[in-house]
Image 1 (spheres, rainbow, N blue to C red):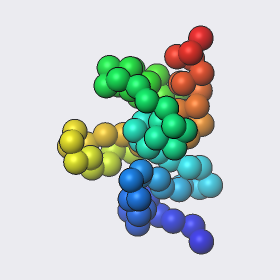
Image 2 (cartoon, rainbow, N blue to C red):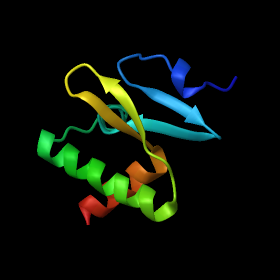
Image 3 (cartoon, rainbow, N blue to C red):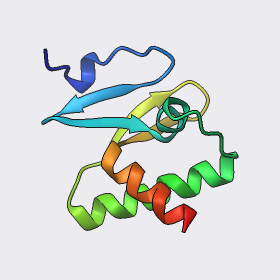
Image 4 (cartoon, rainbow, N blue to C red):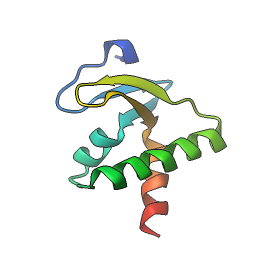
Length: 88
C-alpha cells in the first residue's frame, strides 16, 4: 500500500512516498547506492537537489535527524539529477 510520509519507517534510511514519487534524504540516497561523500560534498548535493526542486516546482520536506536536528528529504529524481550534475 501507499505509505504516508508521516508513517515512513526508518530502517537505517528514511524513505517516504508521496504521489508515487520516492523521497530520500541525501544520506539515505547515498547509502542506498553504496556511495560515500564527505559532509561538505553531501551538503553541496543537497543544495543542488534543492535547486532542482525549485526549478521543477517540487516540494522539499524537512525531517528530523539525530545528528543535525533537521534535514531535508527530496524526490529521488532531484537527487539523481543533482548527483549527475555534481559528477559533470
